[in-house]
Length: 351
Image (cartoon, rainbow, N blue to C red; front, top):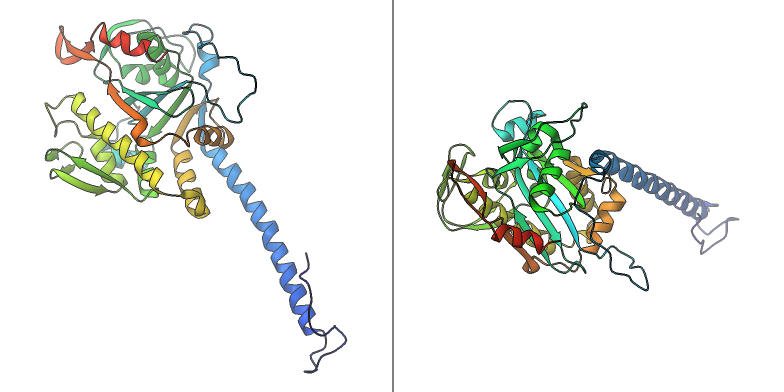
């Protein structure tokens, strides 16, 4: 690539600097060309790096056909450029202690992980509205037999805590258990761990939330006065994990805080025009993908980008957050069970 040359030609000029201007301009042009090549290479490296960040699990292959049916797609005369049909995504926040940062943020050094947070995200056809349904982790359920990652299967477990599914069978068992109790097929699976969530909040510049009561939770190490607060990643994670400092100390109080955080994150993302700041786009993407585990249908930057682009018309005001209807378990006042027929009617509305 050469820049156009103006002024005196290379045979000489009034200052006696024969060939200097063309030489400088040619050097600048070659330098710019080299930078463009390097930038292109860096973009390719960045893309591969982000792709390699993502951990994936082949849930479809593991579960086979023993699942709720896929919804029948409505015929269309022309295929949309982006996916636009209804979609159900199981989103889990895991309390994995793997890695020093997760252990520090999780407040312990125990091995293994549980699904500390579980939400079924239902995207309406057209992707302009969504319903986020939280499933209390203390819900007693019938946990189905699940394939183990190492081979074999787990036994059916009656009256088992919902979050035990992830502990005994990982993402595959978590998905199968959700499908078993809801009758709704999960089209995708997304999991983020402690450190991934905290780093995402920091990459977005924090989140602003309003609490209706004072919070003082020794377990999550969070103290907040009632009111509006701007939280960094560590404090936002503490809020998401707070349980004993709000309400009656049950998981239901924590779910309310988590739903507040979901709305705050959506509003924070909407308020930032990330596409005008490529460096920030990369930081956010690097943060998100580094703490992410997905099913194999979402395990590439291209697929995640397509999903994100299909949600451009979705605003925080069109996201409804609800909790699966539950009641105290007759067998244990510290646990809950699905309240019927309300729970069944909710799940039927998402099929």
